[in-house]
Length: 172
Image 1 (cartoon, rainbow, N blue to C red):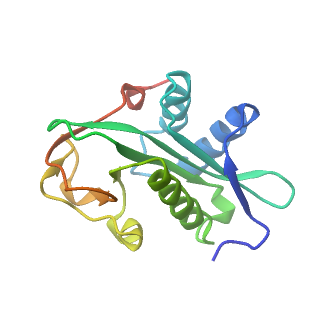
Image 2 (cartoon, rainbow, N blue to C red):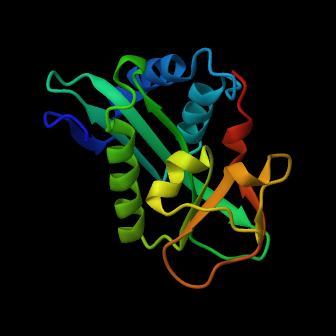
């Protein structure tokens, strides 16, 4: 359960630097991280490819969480699919429901935007609680299949190779 004094809102222009700092801190030292997550968010923002970017604020207006959604392409041509990530929560506040609140709000918002589905690369135990699961018909080359998951929100499940926006190649 997230703190009751937490608020979630759309990213504002002044949030770019605090989001980058939060993202660097959230992924620092994580063995699964390439330490490029903050660069990815910045690259997506510069390219106009942040379809949805939400921040969680504490009661003092400090940004303590962030979630990004961007368009993905599927080789079968199915439109209106998005990728979730990165999801960042301040290290001292992790495991308190902030990430869950951001994911739930973000997915609800994606549905209102007409999303057909969402994919992500992440821990199946965590993201399974939101309905994400491995779909053998959807592939992301070069990653272990069990960590690449999808959530269908509308229409038939597509099949094919998924490609994230080129901003995911950002390294600095």
